[in-house]
Picture 1 (cartoon, rainbow, N blue to C red):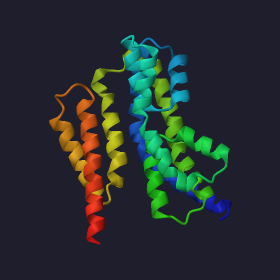
Picture 2: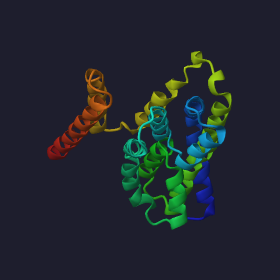
Picture 3: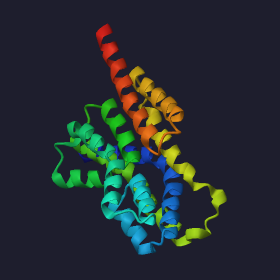
Picture 4: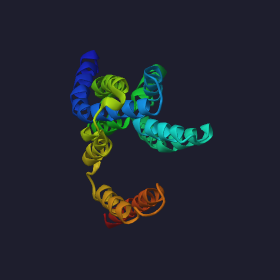
Length: 235
């Protein structure tokens, strides 16, 4: 497949990445504000954003740093939050594993949640895509997202505490994950796992921070796998 296909894949990816800008902007603004209020200067906030490029892990790290947590704890918590990236990588190996090293490195750098979700749907919907077209697609998705993440973070760090609380920028985080997960709920096991995790997260909300969420996620995985096994046996 020629360069025209790679270009069209990149363009199609860019179009699918555009809607995520709506949540990336407030998300980036919020991190910039939080970083500035935590005492980081603009260079430190931007260095954090460009090097780490993982919003949830960045929020976790900044929060622990402001609480004077040990460095090892900050690193461990941030890595734990980003463990899902290991699962993302494993699921992408069949699609991108044969790409040149530099392309895989570039994809790994931009592989945020908002890039993974549309990419894996595209690959599963169009299994005949070449490796080059698949790389071009995910880079296309990242094209409007990553620069806007940098820009929004810079604006947030610059404005700092002048951003009114009434803007309620923290809505961006749950909205981001809802937008990502929604299109992936295409089978009964997916929907079962999502419903179980949502219900249990609410029922276990009074447990110590994080415990209820982890329990809900673990049980949801078991439920989803059980439903899938049950479906396979019925065939």
